[in-house]
Image (cartoon, rainbow, N blue to C red; front, side, top):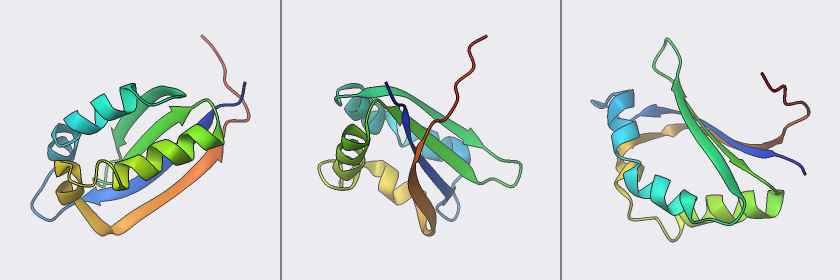
Amino acid sequence: MPEILEVTTLRPAPGLTPEDFVAANADINEYLRGRPGFQWRRIVVREDGTILDIVAYDSIEHARSGAAGITGEMGGSPVHDAIDHATVDWQFTTVLQHVEP
């Protein structure tokens, strides 16, 4: 089964921290847990404060549907105010290798 990653890089809105961005995601996390094909989510921060938001799905169709819901169905989420939208880079990627411990 393929693993599709929705990978978004962004910076928090001016005056906010990466921790503020994470806190603003509570409703998005619940939304994702209920989405078909959702596997996991990681939010990480680089040394420069850039955030990588990575969501894994079991198919490109599920990934596209989940992503569309975050801007559509979840358009009123506080997370949207926690993002500097001029910094967003968003894409789908296919995992080619996954190594287990």
